[in-house]
Length: 338
Ligand code: PHE
Image 1 (cartoon, rainbow, N blue to C red):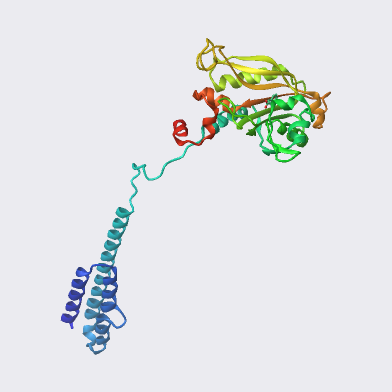
Image 2 (tube, rainbow, N blue to C red):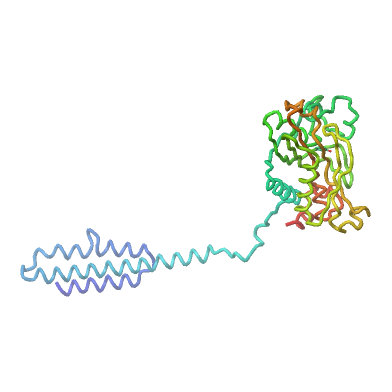
């Protein structure tokens, strides 16, 4: 019996040694250690063994069994490790290879817009957004531009129907905010606006950032201080601002704001057409009529507002000569601003 036990262990070890994959090991386990396996067979033979031989034989059988189980487990672990190594090898990703997926980037207008908004948020402004399709009432009438007002000619309008239109500026958001929030108000509103206009410096779609501050005792000086700070943050610390008298129906007084040309620093170049200055926005003290239209008491509150051309600033920052390049979606152009 001792011989047959040793024979059995030897045969099993040989089989394990020759196994090629996990299924072979499973088969071996069943064949030798299973319910009807060779080992079980031997155990059954124990009933015929003499009582004094039982402890010795039993020990031998058990040791053989433990041995086989250990070797099987080791072999199994080795197969698993080899399989894992194979999978890792096959599914390896070469992270140095960047040809498989073209990586996108933010549109230059989005980048400049985010940069400007960041500056205003740093000054305590809140960001609001609103609809691109507006009513005549919000786009014009609440902004103190009644029907047949000549100022409507300043903003060639795309009409959707008689009383709805593609907003020509972000200013109607002044009204939306004043009608729904109580002063103090300190907001910036980025958004697309539309005008029937198309040349190197005018695109039928472009981007503005509206600004509105309404509080007690707000004056033109606050407007100047705010815009001066923003211009320095946006271009560089040497940038100066200049206010020129202008006209908008919704502000009184109204100004157009220029910054010193960031290319020549003010001495005059092609970008600033030799003047040293570049216009970036329209602004002014909120017309008391607009406050009144929007439910704010002009005897208690005053405000300033501005409408900044994001495209113009992007053109200045990146030296882009034609505004329409931003809207043609030519990836060769867009890729330059990654
Ligand atoms: N809405 C004006 C425009 O689009 C800009 C502006 C905004 C002017 C706010 C003054 C105050 O031209």
